[in-house]
Length: 350
Image (cartoon, rainbow, N blue to C red; front, top):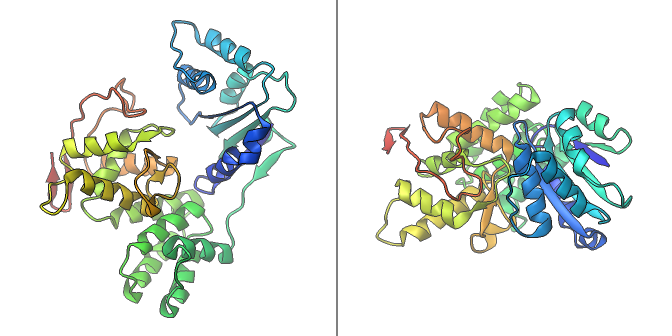
């Protein structure tokens, strides 16, 4: 049992993904499973998703949750497995799901990710990895990589102010990559970078969690007008949703968020907008290299950016499906019609 703790945006998921997707690690286990619990979780859905990942087929039944959990236990029995349990918020949640994880093979491993040190220590007092914020050098290295992708040097007149921006992000990777995405799309002028430095400096005085949301919110406000409703539309997705890019794009078009152009197909324009959101690190690409090729089949959204999308959509009067509705989007299938009205900087979308 291993636990990985740290504040939101510090890189817990990135670390777990590196382990989970490592070819050497994959060869060591009979099966690898990943589930996201989150603050408000659905016990039945998590158990069914684990069974689906394990068996390769969807397994719906009228059984009680405990019976579904017992089938999960039986299918894990005698297998050497690696399971990542993402975003645990309470000991109670962990104590429930651990009942259905067979411990017959002592070589099986479970990695639990949480924001809370007390939860991590209660789960695994001797195998807890507490993640630290980046130092100033590492912060600048990450920001530089996100802006220039290692393909060019930072202009001399921008490096000093760039290091200040990195320092203002307080060592939080999510803040750094989001600001890096913003700067990568900028005109690379000293004036703009100084504006970014001033805005991030003003937000640096807040507590770490609040500081991160302030930085993310400012990044959203800097989006071009045509990208804002596209980002807000993600507020209907679950935290752990594997989102079909093509279907999301078709929904954007159906909602009228993507306007016809004389120079290109509307679908091509929508794909470019999706790529732009990924390049800005507001949306996660399935393979993290979308900027080098075509849009991948699936995308996702970080839980803090999902929270931002929800908060901003409420402020902008972007009225969508209630998040506790049965029509709530998971993998963007069988979703009911969305009704909304949004006013952004003088533009009205219906």
